[in-house]
Image (cartoon, rainbow, N blue to C red; front, side):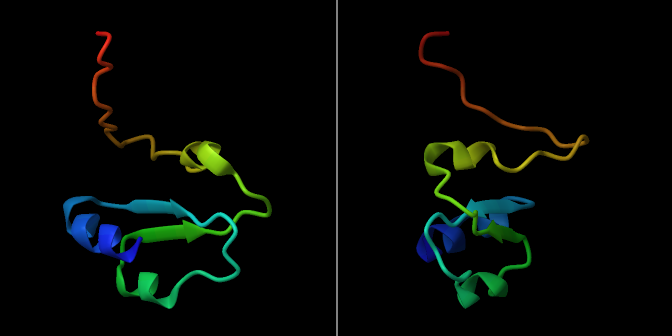
Length: 68
């Protein structure tokens, strides 16, 4: 996970991370100023990607569906 964060944190304004089944947020994540990490009460599995809400003035990029 840390290698992934290191490779993208300069390219984005914010990075949201759901740490399923973690007891503590890794201290290394504190080195990055644009990381927001949470440890949920239960494993959110794939639905964790919907945990955070975007700011109302954000642009979200989603790649087009291969079916489009």
